[in-house]
Image (cartoon, rainbow, N blue to C red; front, side, top):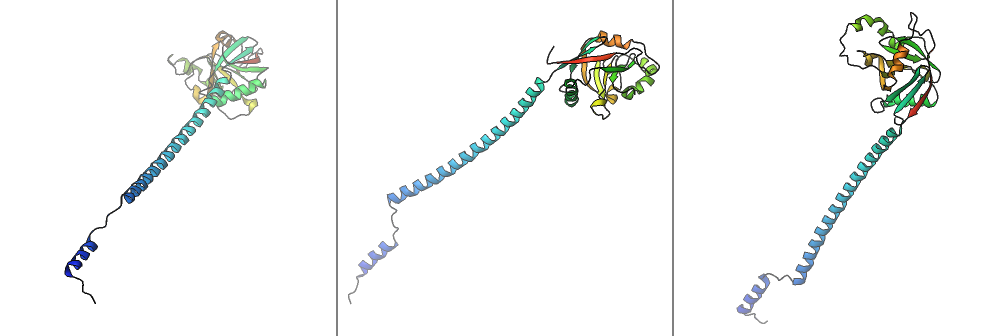
Length: 234
């Protein structure tokens, strides 16, 4: 058996312990893999970020579209009503924004000619005139008992004259009454839902207010609403 020389053994040991070299190809491939992973992660992040932004923008556009649709729908509704009475015409601006539900009901009744031929049932001087189907005072009942007290109040009252409203009590279409104030009333909001204001024909309201009435505040001569004309603007 041949002996290996000590010098040859030393050289073999050095070759085994020495680090192996990494080829250039391996370095390039590893770098490419890392770059591809980073690119994939970045592309995925961009994709989901953009998708989230588009989803939010679409949601906002839908909400804005709904709002604009509601605004356009509201703007398409008539903003004025002209009450043609046996004493003359009364023009009322409708509060579409502050009392939308009541205005909608009022417009619906107007289109169905519900107010045609409706009588002014009660006239309380310096307070209200009331048109409706019932002879009951309803929302105006307390006002008839407070006249002397109101006359002693100062003139800086909260609520204005010539406001159009209806009773707060729940009622069907036949029970929809119309009240037009002829003086400021302190507790107006406790009694009525105000949904409009007279802009023309205040003199007609005052003329109706001055008619003779019986002890129950019913006009002695009939005064009626002959028709109601709706207009988008005046």
